[in-house]
Image 1: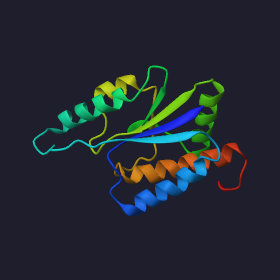
Image 2 (image 1 turned 180 degrees about the vertical axis):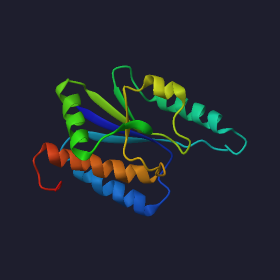
Image 3 (image 1 turned 90 degrees about the horizontal axis):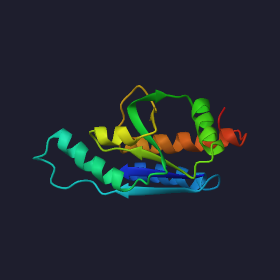
Length: 156
């Protein structure tokens, strides 16, 4: 199974980019992983939140193939602890899916068209984090799941 992370907009903060890269390098030792940044929208001041979500949603859906399993990282998703998340990943791999794609939306979240396409929604916390910071949080949890599945001591 290959894993991909789709994200809206470039990382703005150096500390986020650095943390993200640390975990990305670690994850590549366990599983084929790629990421893809969908450029953020320009000139959105005159757009309503709904319109921004719609336009971003259209861009997200253009990047997703029919046979991909899509997991939205979303505040309305299922809460999982690290052990549950590692079990989720193992189950997806055991079902023989070729591509598992996680998606981090923009600042306003996801449009309904994206929710309709998603196979799963997972929340990483009851708290709200910026869509930039969630990148590092997700990557750390993904790395943690890989170490759990490989019986390594990172998860104590």
